[in-house]
Length: 419
Image (tube, rainbow, N blue to C red; front, side):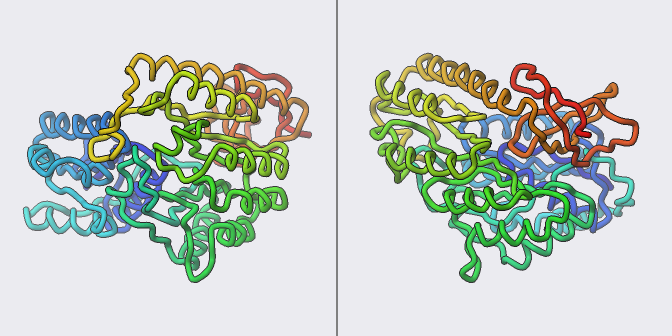
């Protein structure tokens, strides 16, 4: 018996998919790449925007139409946000809600057994795509209730994985040979277990990382990012990259979004973390065309971005999400204006990313090798820049390579192996 996965959305979804795959393997069910024939297909859905949810549901309908005999499973946020009648019409064999996510594999196998189907395959035959980073889920849920966001409704209140369990899984991934562990969660800043917070967890993880490194995914601003930056400055095994979902650089827009901080507070935070880690890879999310965002308010966001050494930006034109307060707000911005403002920020992103890349010329960087093709290795530096290096015959995917960049191609580095 085989299973394949189609995962939409965030790193948290990807981390959960890895755990599903591991649980299927333990049950003797081999994973195959999505698109190849399989007995079970798990769609791990996203609902952060209505567009994302619609894409997941379209795939579910298409797979059922094209593969009437396959066992179809829908998990993830769309299983919570879509209307019951919409879910019922999909023809899924199993819809897994968030409170049953940990029992997904058992539920699938039980359903198959009821139908007289099943019979595990050799899990060692699995030929799914090899991951070169281990995704470590430590937290789920959010209680921020930003006015544009459906996630608190689909993932529920914040809850943290036990500190010891996080460390145990990290040790297993290190023993398996992973050279990078990515710490993921729905809202990592809420992590807390028996008085231990996210900085405590990161400190413990770096101590057990061996020769590898620890990377942090997105971190909500205004809670613990300064303490994390201080740890980055002292601990070389903690990648010097922070991605902050800032969303806007305008106080009136931030207030309507329900973000809970001001631009002045953001600037103080950005000043502090950039001073703490001078070569910090600084990423951020921004939404353009939120209801009430006038042209002058959009220009305030541009000025914030121009003032700091951002190395990457995720830019999204605002999309109305049914079920959120903002969907009913007045002051709607025309769709073409939202897109035009997004294109302006994307152009600014490319400029700033290239400027950040040039700061690495002649410096030594560590590259996690993810691809080797035609004698060239490519992967990502500790501050999340793509880097391409001439590959030696003995180089292996998943290894860490020290290199010295000598040129910038767009925003990617070209480098030679360090002597």
